[in-house]
Length: 119
Image (tube, rainbow, N blue to C red; front, side, top):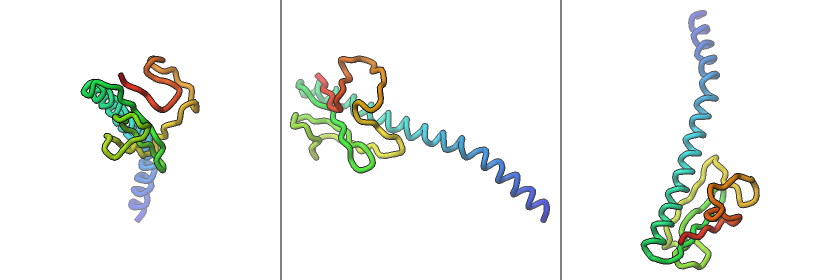
């Protein structure tokens, strides 16, 4: 009986040490997944603009607890049912424009609004 109690104590201590690391790895995975999905939509928007040979907008709209990202190929300012779209919903919170100051990679590509145009 004492051996069982010691074994369970060791198991609980090891679990308590491992859980924060596992949670950090899981959050990193979720964040990487959200970033990859956002990047894929930006690439798709660019390819769609080249394919159609016209300006196509990339839109981000809040949707419940997540963000709806997609293309606006007809230029009406909304993501229609026929436009490609993805819902990014997880612990990763995408902040609206002006909330967090981050140095953008190129001022020409990233504006202060959440509507980005691809030419």
